[in-house]
Length: 442
Image 1 (tube, helix red, strand yellow):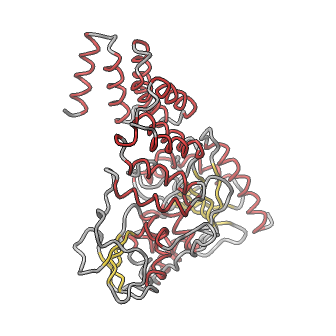
Image 2: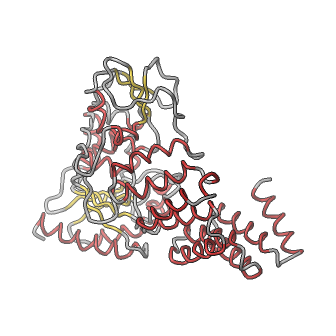
Image 3: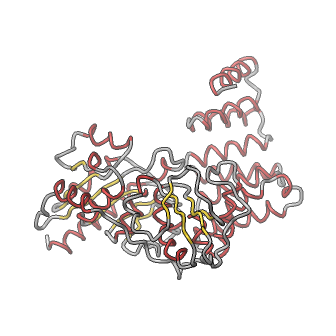
């Protein structure tokens, strides 16, 4: 039964019996899956009017509230579900997810421990899901030793789309001439992040077969590998294999031992294109790149991204010229805004791959953006980048402070627990005025 059919069926059930709390909650679940969060929340609350002791409805309400970013209400709902049914595995897991997304990592780890050791809870709850949540919490607080061990649990998740685990997994030991298939997973930014480990892999003394997205092929062409493969294509013969995103764990990375970013390759053709498009720098003016959204298909993009309109306040700062590096569907906001070519120079149409983007970044003074693969690219280049990040961001940015050991030239501007972008952009605008004064004396 598809979404529309299921919705129609539930609406008929509720028309016949508006006091069916379970049907209300099932409708709320369908609305949440469709991204209609306010309707979902209202349906779950309607269900609780007639079935206030139904722990499942409380937990479903908590899940919808988490997705809506209403964390205090969500945690209250999950606590009520556990008061009614203290040992139900799904409710323990849902509460742990809510705690992590609210940034309460100590409580998250305690809830995961409770779920893992809570009597009847353990057999019913998938261990991979628990370990994955524990990995994210541990990495966020900088516990890389234990976090990267748990990070391997991702390969047991139903949502995992990379190569399945095999008996030929590499353990990081010397290769002694063996062929290692280093396969890619996750997004462009993850591939750039992990590329810093390729020289360390090569030093293990083997042949490296490196999967690389076509969009990254030119900018990562300087890596010392023995073959570059198209992701998803049948690989040549190999002896052992590893995911690129497993490399931090395989090399025992800690906060104090993060390797420097990989050196990138910028072809001269891309540099010529950038020089022609940007022209000569204007004395006394900062050229500032902007990006307001990552890949729209990324599940958490709605929380980490924002709109072009917020970035236009930077055009108000004297001595600043804005250049859009945005790609994908959000690029249309620039054409719709009426400021393309006047307040913001659109570079997106000139960017055919990440090598072209790198060439543009090389010519800019600063990039201000919400988190996406361009942040990893700019950080690897050494271009100053101000990354405006959500309350609980990607784990490489930790949970406090304005710096990350992964990218020395990156400055972080963080949302508070209220997840409000306004104060983040206000701080960034003030910092930009200071930066203009520092660099130009204006």
